Image 1 (cartoon, one colour):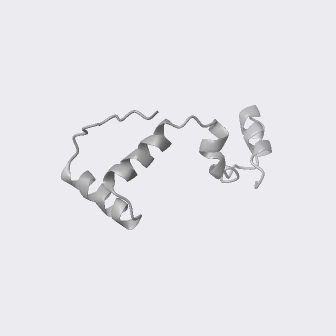
Image 2: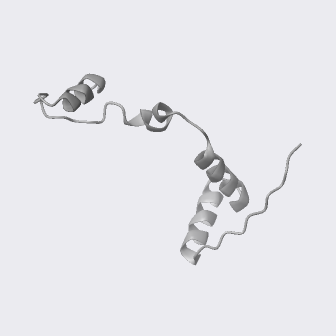
Image 3: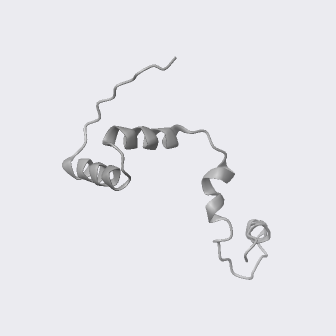
Amino acid sequence: MSTILTLTIPTDEKLQEALQERATMQGKTVPELAREILSEAVAERSLAERVGHLRGKLHLQEDTSDPWRAHLRENNFRS
């Protein structure tokens, strides 16, 4: 059983235009796009899932005398 929740969200004209433009580019309606954005925003995902795309992007100096810096270097597989 699905429940319908209707939201009214005050926005400025710039945001309305941006939503409409993105929805049009994706072949969706603004409500479809809004549902997708809200679903993504409230999805429970682990930290690894949320920031996994950043793995290997950290560039550290060679000095690893600081334990935290050493830990980061060890876990940054592209370094």
